[in-house]
Length: 231
Image (tube, rainbow, N blue to C red; front, side, top):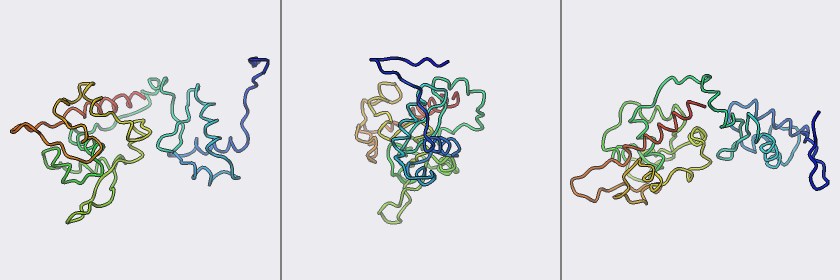
């Protein structure tokens, strides 16, 4: 028997879902990928305030084993973070990213849009075989137009799947240079804070020194990947 809580002489009855709310719940549950509001609206039987319904469903699922989450304006069901360790046996990791791929991803994340030549200049070495292609196969990186310079090289940017994989709502949620320094991932004593997210290259101020500021950012990304493996 369900006990109804009484508060200020008002009885709270368990909420029931309307037919449209059930439709939206089922559509998101069955979807192979996160859905935006427009896509959900196109699939339900009648026009409704989809965003309002999604917020209600999100609250209903907040304390359950499955949560309704919104990442980059797209909705999907996810296992509750508090239960992620229970899922660790269900996930098989087939391949780890190479150091070159992680460093390349870090540069694209903080300098996007950025070209191959610019990535090579920042890393200080030429590309390995299929480095960007591997990131594109994961759908974490995609072409983002062409740079308006001779040759019109392709620029690369991150995708919504990148945000979803690392559980980010938006790129501004990424750690800043100060936060990376505080975590001990980079030495920010000689780094211009403006390079993170502006597309400006890091220029070493001390003659003869060629420090790679991305050499330890891969630890941050690897740590996130390892934590994700446990979900």
